[in-house]
Length: 243
Ligand code: CA
Image 1 (cartoon, rainbow, N blue to C red):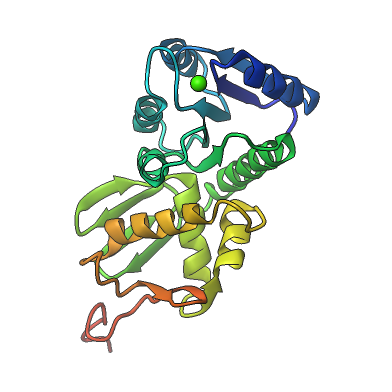
Image 2: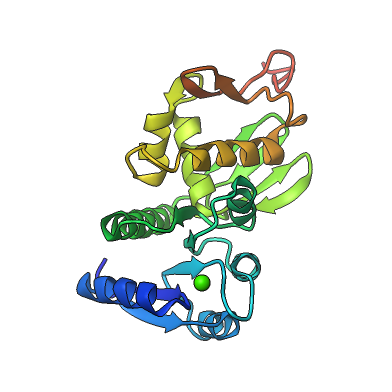
């Protein structure tokens, strides 16, 4: 959506210039910061609609910035940019609450598509907020409106992307969802390079909601095909004593 405020945190002048130019061309309002401290200050002064965050900054680690933003705003879409390609860095970024990940070098088209997708989902979410909805499975109770969940490990906050993924699974309970379907439905991207992102999200879902994340009973891997969500596990969450 034109005019939406994007906080761009990037210290490499060449990259920043290209991104600024293209974001402006798309009609976004861009606040550009090169330092983590300034970025957090800008975020607190006037929250943006989305954050684009480089991981290696002169004064702070982007992961730390991501974590702090996430603590204050569990719903703000965050796109991480990084030259790091190590799997553990990706997982760390997603664990810190980032919604998506682009590895440098990336194409500007891809970048803009991701931004559009994230903003669209976030707008879609804002409309849904009017209707409260609760979903339960196992020992979990998820409040879609509040983006919180009561789980065997306590109450947690969920990001928009996590809610989006849960909605996809819940609406097609018992069906096999292929990786391309999930990528399309949750991230709005065609399934090409970032397929590990999906696996990392599934790992998170299990860590949040499964009694034993190593032996999931709700978020199942269907080898070679995709994933399946199962609400009711035999002898688990059956209601007793119904008339
Ligand atoms: Ca950098």
